[in-house]
Structures are given as structure tokens and as C-alpha cells.
Amino acid sequence: DFGSFVSPKAVPQMKDTAEVLSKLDLSSTNSKLLAIVANLRGANDACEFEEISYLGFPFSISETFQQRNTNSSIEKAFENVMEIQDLCISNKKELVIYISMAFGNPYGDDWNADIALEWANKMVESDIKTISLADTVGVAEPKDIKYMLSNLIPEFDGIEFGVHLHTTPNNWQEKVAAAYENGCLRFDSAMKGFGGCPMADDDLTGNLASENLKTYLSEQNDLPALKEDRFNLAMQKAMQLMG
Image (cartoon, rainbow, N blue to C red):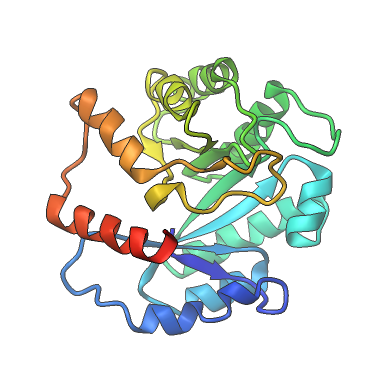
């Protein structure tokens, strides 16, 4: 996850995404960059950069959060997905759909696991190849993670399903295990678990910490190739920046 192409007025912290991108040296890395977009205009902006391989769109199955996050209804957001998918194809980029609020929401909007599965199915039918189930406010239960992934991964060959987990120091491992043990190999994470969703009630809820994910996958003998010195340097930088 690199950054976002959204309105600077809506998210001032993201106004320098293009400037940051211009200063990255990508000449000797296999890493690929993803930019989050909230609408077609943001997608068009992101497509101007060859350095970006993936566009991510937060598709919320909570009507309230979809309005708050992208200022559109679920129906309109799905129309945006179709337009952005066409844009990605024509610009040789891949669209990643985040099923936001996939495990529940704090607004009282209708939710159950089958609603999330229904929308995941619709994305597959629309030829979306990468779909991430987002635990936006950190309420996912291991049983729900297991239920969704065990119904999706065996069903759709060639589709990559992932999880975007928001966790606490006490529950990250059970959530990761529930996903991994049911075939998930795509995890979003952040150094020191930095970030999270401001709608989460628990101050300890943040992104899944990269160092925790690294430890878990090492224990499973399934850690992808990693330059330890670069990882440790990044951790040191993260500690300096975030405390």
C-alpha cells in the first residue's frame, strides 16, 4: 500500500502522494506499488503514473460508511468499480477491491457474513481478480474469517482473496491464524501496526503489525523471501518516526 489519490480537501495528509512517488527509487526492487482511490477522478490521476501497478478501491457493504468514506451510495460505488475496472484494463493496471466493513459496522447497518460473501461473488463476476476482506473497525471474529475464506477460496480458482485486518496486541494472532489456516496468503500489514480506522472504539486497534505477521509466517515455515537487513532498517525508521 503506497498512498491515496483522493481529494486533498477531504484527506489533507494525502496531498503530497505524487511528490513522494517522484522521489522513490524503484530501479532495483521487485516491490509493486498500490494506490487507494475513492472515485473515478482519483483513478484517472493514479493511472498517469507508470510506477503504480495496483489501484485499490474501498467498497463498503455498510451504506453509512460508503457515504462517509467516498460520498456515494453502495449502488453508485459499484458503478464506480465497473468504470475503474475498465480504466485499469486500458492502462495495464490491476484493480484490488477492499470489501470494507466486511465483518460488521458500528452504525447498525444490516450485516452478516453472507452479505459480505454476496458482494465478493459480485466482484468475481465482474472479473475482479484480487479481493481483500477488510476488518475495518477491528470486530472480526476468527469464526467469521474462517467461514468467509473457506467459502470463497476453494470456490474461485484464479482469484486471490486476502484480508486487511485491524487488530489489538491481544487478538492479532488468532485472526491471522484463522485466515492462514483457511488458505489465505495475502495479508495487509504496517510497521508497528501504525494506522487504523478512527471509527474503531478501541484505541489499541490498529493495522496488523508487519513484525507480528513476519513472526507468524516464520513459525509456519512460510515466510516469503525477505531482506532481513532492509526489514530491520525499516523497523528502526518506523520506531524513530512513530515512537
